[in-house]
Image (cartoon, rainbow, N blue to C red):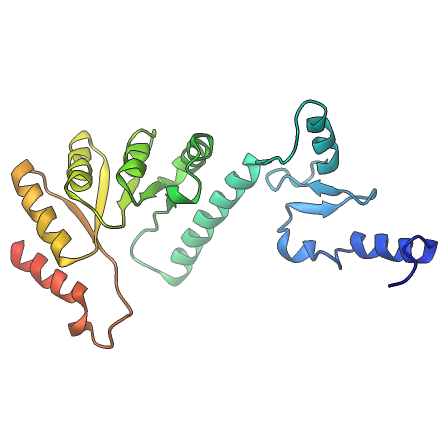
Length: 231
């Protein structure tokens, strides 16, 4: 293994760390991190390119004075930066290729259900009219409680029971744009039944399946036919 205490080995190790050869920071760090001159990991602010990096080790040492590890350190600037990146790049590509429709991003609540994270996502996404994606009644309630813009979408995925569908339909009455993504023919029939009983026109979405060699074999083909027949 060698003598790690030797000056040559230590200097080589520091040099390797400094250049990012060991941890590959330049590959995965995306201008969020850098190795500082003291060998510690520094946090960069992508929203303020000329700002000085923050020493992560110093942050941890300060936390250790009052708390005990492990810690989760959340950098809200990274969240804002990535939301900007996703939306701006999609809109740029749409403009470049001449796509005639619009891109609307949605944040899947299941990724991180913590209130402070969702509120930050909603705040930073407002200028893009971004919405939220939910997969359960609990997540739908979280989404409905957020201060979304008028044009933001709430996309409902996953298996839905009667209560889930009713809540989704009723939310459209308070000017929310809640889309029910159809998962099966059984689910579609339930949506049609409940929308008639509540006298609410549903907003529907269909997910294309790659499991069938022919479009005519796909359950979604049957769903589309049934939708047209019920129109």
